[in-house]
Length: 400
Image 1 (spheres, rainbow, N blue to C red):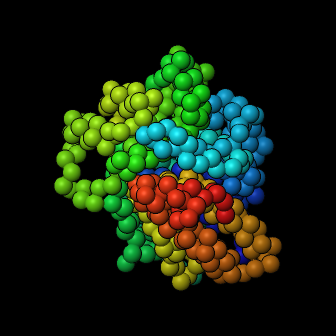
Image 2: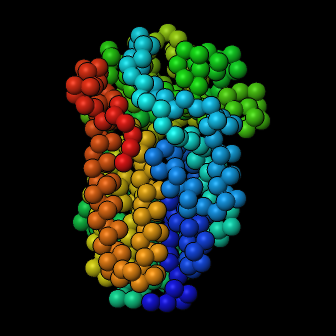
Image 3: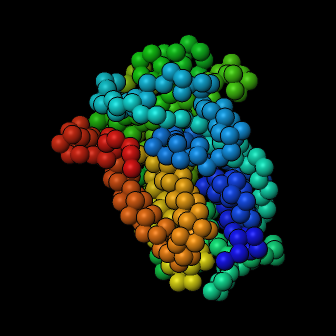
């Protein structure tokens, strides 16, 4: 097979898609990457992500100059130099620690900044939303809504949890599964004194907990420091999620509705944390509701071997184990390694595709369900308080 003729197509310029493009570029393999958005800043980029067990793989796929810039994307400058690695989970009513998960190497980074860093040297075709995919034994062609089309030897679907490519590979089961839990968060600003207070009593990077009296989940994490955002404040995420079996029945349409619900579900929050709730309510113009949904199949069907899925497109999972980004990185690393073997003719093209599918399904499929169970456990204090007996995946070690 010629490796300098037809390119590899990448649909989606998120972290997984851009990481793939960077790796292919280093190998000298032609690629075309395209995205439905008009630019990198067209939509909100979410908040922070933690790179932990896949951190070394992530760095290994990047050129050295970009590797160094990854550390500049941390939510707190040079935090990795003195990071204890502890993950703290509390009883959010008493503020007592339920568990400290043992230290592990990690980087907590801003998603928007890490994405812009991965864009360096990569030419993305923006405003290219996939509307049609056609495959033959030797190639795949993508037609976009704007009339443009791309032809390559392989299409990598990396569009995220609502992947368009997945609709073509899995027409009968591409839909996401919605969990009976609602999630709302906001970005708030803390003074130096307020941030120091949180850091001293809880954690300077992130911590989570559950309010036993109503099973509401609470999550705090740092997003940026004054050195990065140019203000005198620390920007932080304050998030709540709660059991909601019938979302249509819960009044949640207006900002006022959301404030009323947040005040209700956060009752019982420790008095030393209540000021964060008040700051969240005051920042109601920044409310962000996140749809808690997943896709546990981690499998795709393409008999001609011309399409694969990576990241959330292949195994969308909720964030309660912090693993989605790490599994996406593992997908890219796996594909690049297999592609190298195929290029050396150590394995055939079809063997490469099948090996990729088998590994991802075996690794990420169970991970989706573990994250789902972790979400449910986060809203079930009776089970959570005896997590060692109940073996809750919410508080188990995050690792492959």
